[in-house]
View 1 (spheres, one colour):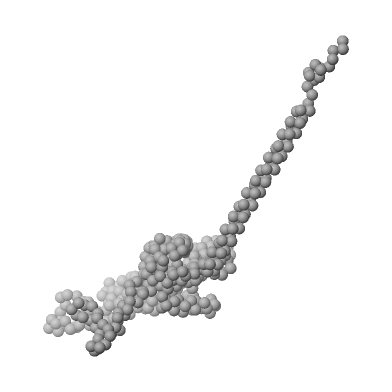
View 2: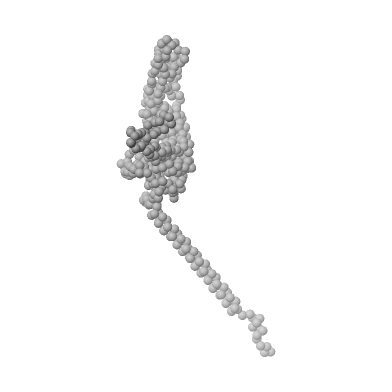
Amino acid sequence: MLPPPTPSFLTRKTKILSQLSVPDAEYTDVSPKGSVDVAIRELIDEINHGYEGLVTTSSCAGRVSVYLEGVKKSKKTTNTLDGGNEVEEEGGEDGAGAGAREATSTVTASSSGGKGGGEWLFVSHDPLELVDLSTGREYDGEHWMEVFGLTGRGSGSGSGSGTGTESGDGEEQEEQEQQRLIHFKFEPMILHILTTSPSHAHLAIQSGMTSGFRETGAVSILPRLTAPFSSSCHQCHTHHPHQSSSTSTPTSTESVTPNPIVAIRSMGLSFESLIGVQPSSSSQRESLVTPEYLSLLVKVANERFEENKKRIARFREALRLAFGSDEAGGAEEKKKVGDSGEWEDAEARKQRKREEGLARREEVRRRKEEERERKRREAEEKGEGKEEIKGEKEGKVDLAEVVLQVPDVL
């Protein structure tokens, strides 16, 4: 048996559900999209309403994106050598003479993950349409270059022709360092679930691992110890209750049941490709790849979407099997009924299943009765046929016997 939900967990779950209960037209969150993805909205509802010991905190159904990194910042550091003593140094070369030396290091203001001042050029949480519905023709690479906001054919953009001078090389290198990279990425579903106990977390992790989300894990799985008045003992490296006087009562250390957060995720389906750059001196986004390569990336992303969809379905079924009859502390397991979108508790579902079972049994019994009646009628019809045949045979007169029975009058 799983432990019942803790009061602190129920408080947090109630707050989360109240936020999710807002109509879709009014709901918003801090994600770039600002709402729950339609592709996993049904899964989110089932977890939040069907398992008392679980509640989702964040989610993404999977996405394909084109991301422009943020502006890179140059950081100058001065290395001053005075009489061989290094005053300040960040990097540099060994064997430098006395005097001042400046080194420039480049710091990226944002990573390819989407944080730090970058820009989303394209984001889709659904597979991309490969065919123009109006003409029936398949989109080519030029179409995707336009959709992603890229120009050029990637013939060494930003590489420069090179003047052969030190100043030219330095400017060229600085220009390359200031370029903002453009990434094409596919990321599968990621789902964070707050659980009421490590036992619940274990089942959720197991469900994620067996359904293909191999990098599934959890945080905050160990109990937290609370000791408001404690001091460290340097001899045994433990905490002891603090006593302000000889008459005071020691404060006992309390163990707070953890509420682990499980992350359902997989890196196996993820992939990323560098497809373009934006020079610091221009707003034009130059492609580093061919249109054909962009078309290939889109097709691969769509294939990953399909596999991601299958894994989500397997995860949903794995959760049902893991928590099916072993929900926390007699909690009411709720399931969705048909297409009506309504939820039913365990007792109502049990009654419905019983009625459906009785109806099926009655249907089977009726069919057997009909089958027996049909066979009986067929047997009767066959029996009547045999009687008629027998009667016909008995009604026939043998001429030889008639001749023998005629008296000889001659």
